[in-house]
Length: 263
Image (cartoon, rainbow, N blue to C red; front, top):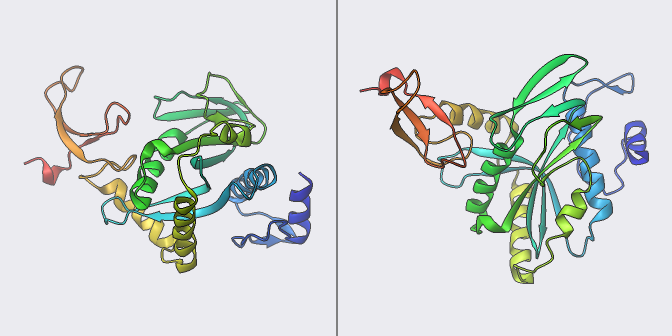
């Protein structure tokens, strides 16, 4: 918390990392995205202060291209690289009660009697893992997903072990079996350094890729797997044809077939 006060007052960063510009009004941040930005900095500070820099490398706010033009891009808050695996961390800075489970498409936040639904972050990191594995040519089993909730929130349902309110560093450190040698770790870090140095993908391009992904009739916007035609076998829509994700049952995305594709 002390480091946040320093950053808010003086704009300092004890780790010398690049910052996205945050607009101010009379010295006070007012951008609506500020809450999310602060949450990411809290997670970032925790990672940098608790993980040994000789064992773990941390990359932040990284936009990963698909490399094949099919799945667009994905933005990852934090990526930790080590000989023990890669760790994708998505930060949620939220207050109030949080309800959700691994299979639900939407989770719920209740704060001062106001109810808000948001995308299941595990589905978000699952897609990120697929794209990161493809981009780096790694086995998905060597990439781990974590959700870090910060802020004054309380889980009101049982959460998976990788959805945390604290102890992100302890979760990472429990993986202590080396699966990459030093050459592999160097190669992965160099790939990220090149990606960030090139800065080849702008935020606008990333936003356009999100729109294109959700408009696609060939690939799932959640996990990037192919979509295929299926026929409803039960319920009110029995007999109707729809698009379903080939990643089922891990991904349960479905979509109506566009009118111009029904033929």
